[in-house]
Image (cartoon, rainbow, N blue to C red):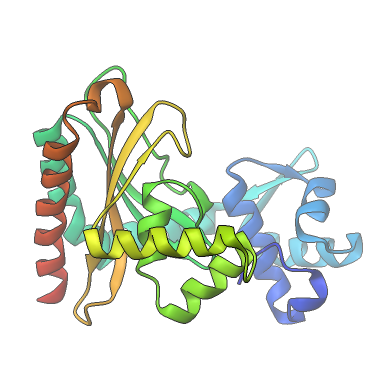
Length: 249
């Protein structure tokens, strides 16, 4: 569920999760006024949810600002340690980063966002990175487009309608680009999200042959120029290895 829905569209029982999701995505502490603006909740409702989250250790308050608490950090640590996807992908990501001398990210789709689960940084002083936990809309960039192209049809159509507008020429163009990505087996972008960044994103498939994530190789555009075919091939080979491991689990 998107955190941008109007409060009336969010069940009362889900509002505490809405507040926690907004805090988690923001990446830094937030004042109550900012939380009210981002969630659309009334002050009294917001403070009730914050009180519940503080009582359970999911939120900390300092000088009137709120941030994810220790229990949230424990959840994140448990996810890292227990996630089958991260465990299977990480060694291949390390190998790809060493082979290519560039950065590699593991990205998943959650509702209408692309979220970074894991990151292996290049050893170059000038390098590209997608901060772990960062989220971007499923709209621009190799990672977002690769994930969107491989979503189930109903979910893909819902995102296309929300991002580009149902029945618009822009939506038709986006749909055609996604079809081309599915046929090619990868997505390429140049400076779509961050200026000067080249990216190649390849889907990772699980046992059901459904895409479960995307692995993205990213490099400064000036260093990637002339190396795009070789870098793309490296990413596709590594992604195929991970997909075989996921399918055999």
